[in-house]
Length: 187
Image (cartoon, rainbow, N blue to C red):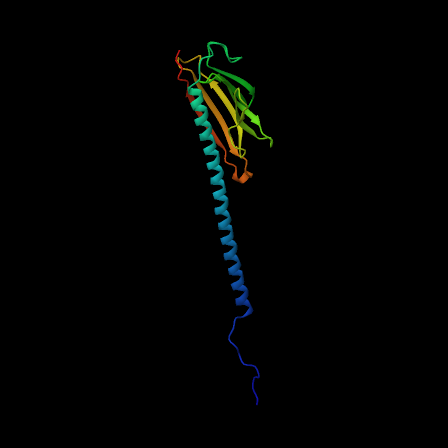
């Protein structure tokens, strides 16, 4: 009985196993990175959509009320001259306030206010208790009003607004809104 006691068994060598495991790891890591990029892209899109929807709502609410503004003929709203509809008051370099008398005879002021988290949000102040109109996840960076009442026969206010979602920096979605709203009150 001379010969090999051991039979050759077909199998994988150590190098083949290492190459297979390395390729498998590279494929799994690549797939994970692609999945992470898709999820991050979706989060960014959702943040942009939230900002866009909030600014759209802001524009609709303010536009409707501003179009129906009345002349302050009886000096009902303090600070607004009797011959004007709108009064723009600078608050700081990033913010103004807009005051006017609405169609219900209420004195209305649009401005920025700080919430409990220290975020600037759009607030509407009326004779009744006021509340924020923009959601907590949206921060208003800049709010300016430009009153064109003296240069036009039909009173007009231009709103410049910059906002972003308060998500992490990588999902921050900055948006700028500029719109002009004319009052239906004619001189």
